[in-house]
Image (cartoon, rainbow, N blue to C red; front, side, top):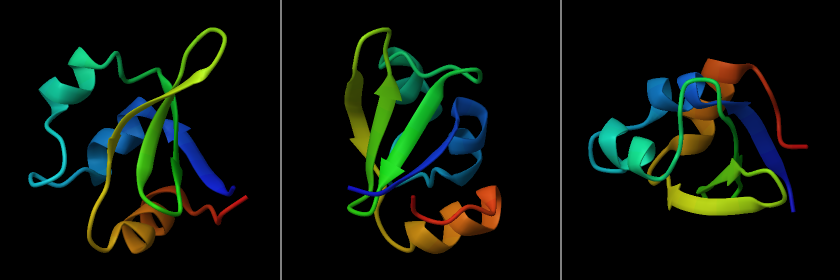
Length: 75
């Protein structure tokens, strides 16, 4: 599976209102310094101490938003 990794701060910049709210992300444990990743299906995963947790998802034209904000490609 391929992902684009980023900080929680970067994720907050690309989230749209119809996806998740900043409060929902905070409730799931995402903070500005968190390490998160998004897969090609749009699943958002949060890095925990021993594993990754799915905490939500992106919809719509998220691939373009990810690339524009991070400058990264799927790896």
